[in-house]
Image (tube, rainbow, N blue to C red; front, side, top):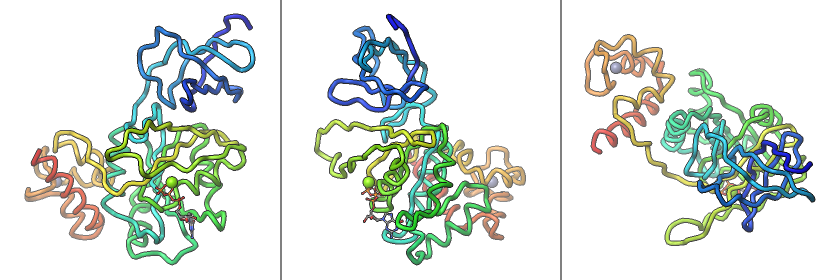
Length: 289
Ligand SMILES: Nc1nc2c(ncn2[C@@H]2O[C@H](COP(=O)(O)OP(=O)(O)OP(=O)(O)O)[C@@H](O)[C@H]2O)c(=O)[nH]1
Ligand SMILES: [Mg+2]
Ligand SMILES: [Zn+2]
């Protein structure tokens, strides 16, 4: 046991300790070795020296594959974009912004349409019609009916998932039904954090009994497009890629150009009109910058 080093995953930072889970699912309360200067994030893969009584010393952080700002998590694999059938009605612009952010940060997005037990708003119907046939992952869920939870659990297996979406769409409720079997209890993430308040946020990764981890995030309604060359934006619209070969110009922005394969696809409904409009809104913001 003495001086044995093992690898693990940081689940949370709380009260000055880091809680690190090893491959056998044991959780160690760790103190930070003084020489570690970088900020340790939930999701970090680390090396720890084991002490007695499930304690340890966090020795070093392994290289990160990505690092999100909101929630502040390292090494996330999946972005679960939670929208509701209704209450609140989905925002198509927020959905497309979140998709761009997911691809930009090298996350696999899953569109989760929750509250399947409620009648669907027309925007929820538009999402259901367009995205699955255009190759996006989409799962419908209902927390009270227990619908779709197993499918969601299967998607998260062995991966680190973070959630995003408008306030009230059911992110915390989904998280609670996913982790119930792991015996964890989630606290409500406060929505009041932010503007003018200096509260430190403890982002916690909750292990699922079936494998994988999930983090909650308070809801929000707007999100910036990541800073990039306007030319790059279409790279983060995978459904446009089948049509760009028909653009006359190699550097086509699919904007004011003539002979544009993307605009042709919009004209005959292969790309949804609203999706193209959201692209143009983001593009114009990038051009103006
Ligand atoms: N009918 C129905 N209500 C749901 C469902 N899931 C969640 N709710 C309800 O929707 C409300 C909001 O759920 P939350 O889980 O707090 O939503 P949230 O996305 O975490 O919201 P924020 O934390 O504010 O971002 C609660 O009253 C839930 O009980 C569902 O599938 N169907
Ligand atoms: Mg919540
Ligand atoms: Zn084009």
